Image (cartoon, rainbow, N blue to C red; front, side):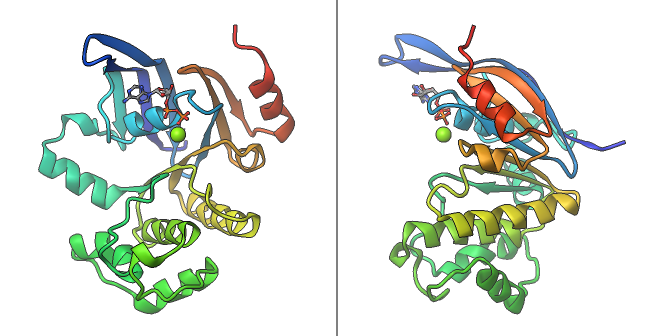
Length: 243
Ligand SMILES: Nc1ncnc2c1ncn2[C@@H]1O[C@H](COP(=O)(O)OP(=O)(O)O)[C@@H](O)[C@H]1O
Ligand SMILES: [Mg+2]
């Protein structure tokens, strides 16, 4: 039986608005699971809560209510130092905003998590990966001198070398051309084949249709869980009126 890696139960998320005078519920009771080796996609219109859900389920932003477990650990119960180690050693993040360190060269950004956890840096493996990613700039250049697409590749390379058991990616190929998108998808797929659990937010139907399971969000609610999604099934789910 496949090992469960992520378990999200009845998660809600509210934020204060209007100078703390009001609260707005963004996520309304979401439950889902994902297994080792599974490629899960989260798809839905802009503003439907995809990023908020990813942040809540990945241990970055505590839900207002409900439960999150990653590898049988509730990340929100960990003390800050333990939480940092848990994230660094088990979880990879690819953010929409890349979250790179601009004052460091690209290469140093990739190996930062390895250095922080005193792991070996295999330079030739990293150069090979950059080549596979069609990274065309000099890895010694500062991140601030790279284009958006090149920065995205660095953020992806950083996750690919870290040996995480779970990867959370928020529109990881948004800034990239079709060929790079395909290359990155294939690299993530290779990781799920090795037992990694990948959770990817996307609004790309074609990419979602190549994952193992898609969940559709609308207005902060989980609408459908589609196993082995096809592009047609996703298109239909996304175009149905919410009831
Ligand atoms: N901190 C916040 N304060 C107020 N509204 C927020 C906040 N974060 C997200 N939202 C709102 O919640 C909804 C979902 O946002 P988000 O998760 O970023 O959507 P998606 O990633 O699907 O585009 C949006 O309407 C957004 O404006
Ligand atoms: Mg988003």
